Image 1 (cartoon, rainbow, N blue to C red):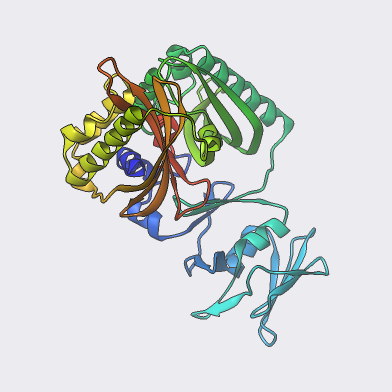
Image 2: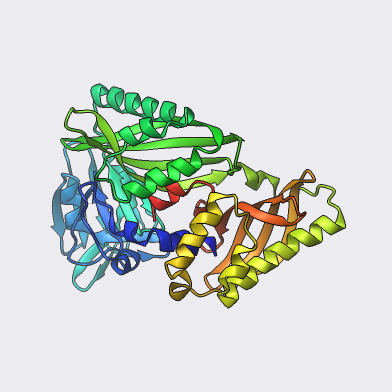
Length: 406
């Protein structure tokens, strides 16, 4: 459902991964696993593959990319690798390995395919002391060496302090000055900030971890917490982000790219709550959600829009994508097996729904408001997909994040 909404809005962003703008097709991004070492893509003659939840890659390009000297014992089908600090030994068909002489268990055994030996990527990278990040949505793996100096950390911390101050002041001028004008979908990012700033809230950046600094900028992992205070509602969310920062001509850092690795919403803690709700209100809320489902499934634009609060930016953006031919791109068969109101105060409600669509089962959370005419309308929502990692979610509560990752 809503995962499709923002998937269409941001389709072109699937093509942006390299900080300098290297591109791949959306189809290739979905079908191929891509591996990056400090943001530089690694090349393999045999494409990386997943077996039983473990990603395997050709051993020689991986080891040599990690600065190992490699020796292959063909008789024993044994790999010996040494980078001066770490010595690794793996054997084809064996679910055990040695790290600096110490025996350890492998998640899966190396194997040979089409004349090439493949090894479990995460084991090798983490045994070397590097961080491994798997992006389920884009099928990308990032190996980060963590090689940064104190000057880099100070510079990145200073930039994020400026960004959080600008966001908390709700200053579009200050925020726009911190975004690279060449960033993909720059205008859309500014638009989304403008909508977002109609609400009052608090943003904090913590766990700031710059993992590399380049001549043209930096890559940073960070936790962003966004808490709503007043004005148009949005769901409180904590996100694990990857930021790509570029350097302006004056040497100052600017935001070029922001990707969501994972996110969790405070509203999920409400699931299972059972506040007292009048029967009439419960029926009206369910009717609105069913109207939404019917609007999706029958591709009826007006019916779909009638379920949303027209004063919200969700309604305005939904109108825009409908005008751009959204229903020509996507199909729906959406229904709810369960609808539960988990927070209610007479004028607003948070609703938990267990839903099924063409792409599988999902848990949705809705923030709903009663208008002056007494009708309940959707003002915000997010979706948790059951068939992906627990942290795979799509949100309409902060489209800037959504637009910069998918």
